Length: 94
Image (cartoon, rainbow, N blue to C red):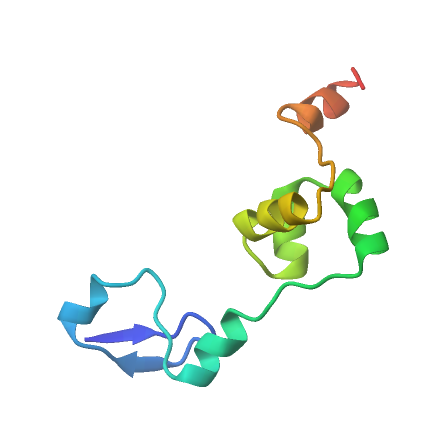
């Protein structure tokens, strides 16, 4: 079976039995390492961006998942906008 690499998008063969084991598939160990590299942004810039953009937008900007940003904020004890913050800001309540 042919699928695309999660990181470099090159098409490669994989056995159907391995397809169910993982959500993400990589063509090589190098691609897996590059895709799972450590998220380490500039703290001052990240703190400003955290309150300028929703986390979903930040995940696209930094090229990581939303969960990675949540974990980073928890580890570094960063305050982040609560649930509904962006809707309230858009409505002019905040």
